[in-house]
Image (cartoon, rainbow, N blue to C red; front, side):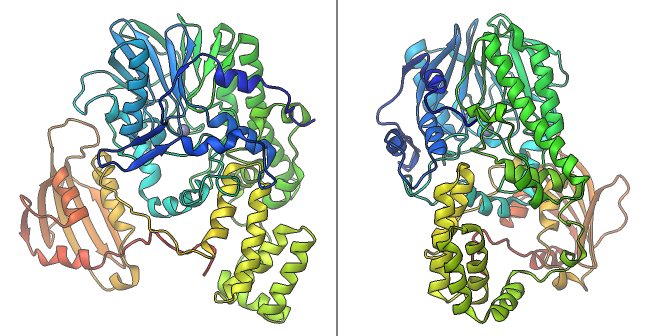
Length: 606
Ligand SMILES: [Zn+2]
């Protein structure tokens, strides 16, 4: 049975405890550039148009609310000031901030709204629930970089905060542009948000390293008089994540492990596949540890759930959802079905489908099931006819040829479009575009198929992908500025060297050989990521190898520098203060072999 549009519980909960918001609900940076505009989502208050899936429209309505809300006595949330929520827990001498949003500007505005209604309380601690940027990026909007207050996070936070986006960063960003619907206008024919929330803000991002690690479930900390019991949940929605309970408030924070949608096991921007079984198990553990003693459960996206029985039901449904997808995928996989088949076979159990929060507004059952297949068996479906297929352009040219040319392929695509088989219409039209990118009609038919697919999608990120694809068939790709400068200081020396190694132009470097010894001096900040020590770098056969060493052999060049100097050298070629002995020409050779990523690569065209 589908979920009931007449059930207004989610709307009541999304509005419950509302205190105030700001007007206009826009936030700009110091240069006056608008980095947040919640008023732009006001169109969602209207009735659902025929260009949107009604279930997604409903989710968009819930996500376009904004303001300061009382969750329970002493606990507040600012919602709708970014993709994520900021939670504020009043402590003896001030307030604890949980998850300071994406940008420092939105975080500062959220804290200011809280203070305007609850007094000018000092921030006494910051908690990051997990290592995704929408949960830490705005930290400099709530405390200064040299703050002395505890910064609390699950163990291995820093490693995961930077590593997920370092190596595949450019590709992820470009793909993220699709799933986030970044270039789309907000509106009935444009983006409806991301299902998880409106969209990320676009202000200044920063990071302060944690000073207090949560290393085990059951760990109890008292932060400025507030008692918190933690549950470590590594490998769920994020490799470093945690739930926690405020026993004296009978309140439970679920981080991003249980939100009002089916989440992603493999986000469409690309990532490593998450583990639905572990995810489900940690939700089970959260029920056992906390749920019965909680009167309210809140998360860092969406609205809270009140009432112990309702929290237990909610968590059981979320738990069952991930377990069901996992177990059914494996059951069918072991009967010989492949990911694309299983995705069509597995239906959400009626008991779960009745609940709105199990619906795939951010993740979808379809792409999550394929991700589970990928997690266990990989990209190859086992059919050797698929083991060595032609890549897109070569395949497209052959398909188009056997169909009888571009016009015939487009005509066939139109017949499938007219029959409502949008999926096959898109496939045929995509072959036509890849074989003949100059064909306006091929692009037009593909754009029509993708647009219709977008309008029908319940999943917000699917809608965004389809509509951005349709858009890019007729508009120039908008340039994305990629800057690693903000995150670079948090990288280890090994990660910094890795990020150079993955940019070496292989064939160009085939016949080059060089060795560099690096001595990275401590920069005095005392953090584990400083990575001071000796490293050896060797280029051979087009591969740049590097490793820490205590006894480096002779090298062509020896470089001695601090980590900030290393970052300056790698990002901007700055050599001030860097000591070199040996042949400095080696560095120039290495730099000459570095290729550039393309942040604006084509996706729907060859
Ligand atoms: Zn998040």
